[in-house]
Amino acid sequence: MVVPAHSPRVYRLRRQRARRLLLILLSTVASFYFINSSFFCLEKIIINGNYNIPADELERVLGVEKGINLWHLDTELIEKRLATQPLVASAQVKRQWPRTLVVNITERVPVALIVQDGVFFLLDGSGVIMERLARIGHLNLPLISGIATLADLAPGQAIEDECLHAALEVAKQLPSGDLNRLQEIVAVSPTDLKLIWEGNIVVRFGDCQNITAKLARLQEALTGLDAGRPVEYIDVSYAGPPVVKYR
Image (cartoon, rainbow, N blue to C red; front, side, top):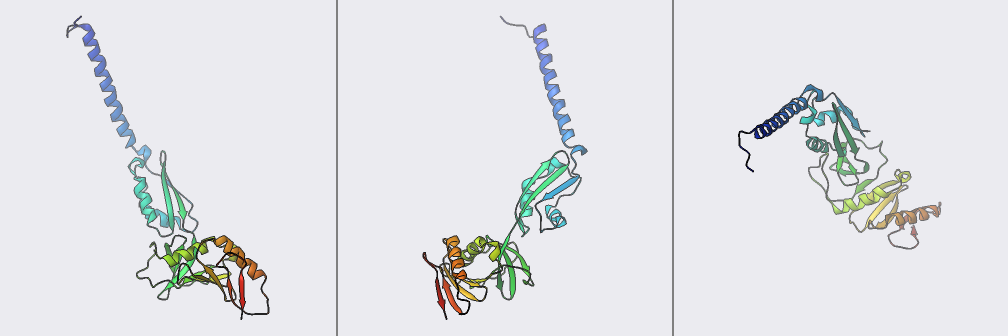
């Protein structure tokens, strides 16, 4: 059966379709104006996890002005900006509707120091330079020496050096109670690390494998030392009882 184009039924269907299209258009326009209204203007920035980095420094790096529409913020771009701060290991930025921005920071943890051309640099466990230091007396962290001379070092730079990373593996697994006892890690070779323990005791450590077991053997040797005899070295580089060589 063919329905004439001018019949009441066709006319009614056309009117219903037109009303639906008009409602969709009005809803779209209303949504656009609502999303871009002052209801979503940024009023508050919450920063979590910053124990050593001042909040005002992080807000400066954020580059976000209060009053901006929350919908217009690029959270991935803000996270990339925060990653340029040398003390920031990672950052997560989220919108908290309707007017708040939440920034969760994970800070880098210092594990060791290096010195290059008379300047001290603080490193995290991945070899990223956290900052330059004029003095280090307040830090209970080991100094890593023996690595090649590195040029143009700056905070935020990741150092790619095999010897350095072998030494950092040892520093990362060192119990916190021993931080002030380990004075230096000599890393001329990644397979021939030497620790300088308190009292200037040389510890032949070998490579950075089985670190926990080697540290346990070192504690065993230190506990059994003859207090009246100077130690030339302690060797924990291989499996088995530690070797103590007296002078």
